[in-house]
Length: 85
Ligand SMILES: [Zn+2]
Image (cartoon, rainbow, N blue to C red; front, top):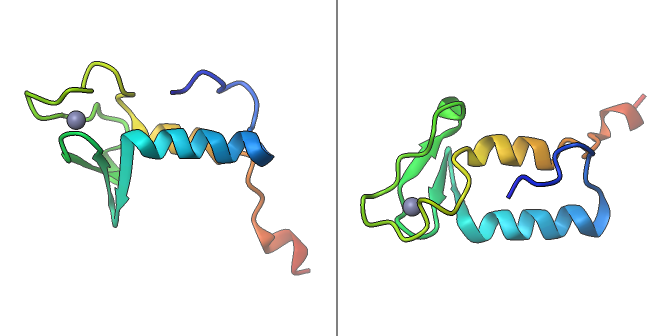
C-alpha cells in the first residue's frame, strides 16, 4: 500500500485502492483491525505504528499506518458542502 501518494486518486482507481486497503484492514467502529491478527488501532493513535500480535502473518508486509493510508486515499473525495450554496 501507499505507492501512489503524490496525486489524489479518483474513479475506479480510488475504488481499487480502497478495496486493496480493506483486504489488509477492517474498519470496526473507531478501530482499524488487522485482517490477520485482528489487533486494532484507534484513529486517535494514527501516528503510531500498529502493534500486531507476535504471530501475525502479515505484520511485516502491511502498512504500519492504516489510518494515514485511508486519509491519503480519500484526499480527492469532494464533500457535497460546496454544492449546497
Ligand atoms: Zn496483524
